[in-house]
Figure (cartoon, rainbow, N blue to C red):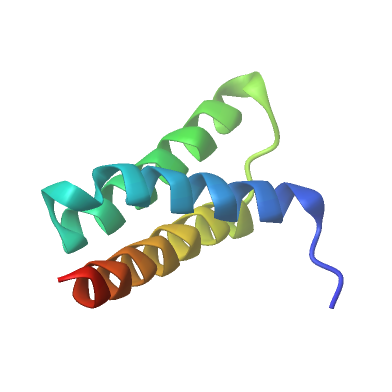
Length: 78
């Protein structure tokens, strides 16, 4: 599967935001990642880039996966 580098970057940024915020709560981490993704697309729409719904989805998906992985690590580490 050939996933464009831009979508990969959005995914990893969503993951990073979620992992950073995760200590404040699972759902809050996902919400923050999605919010950052939405804010980036609004920024792009205002003339600073190319808005793309798939960029938002990639960021949100990264946030979801990041929160799940952090939750699994927290469960394993006690």
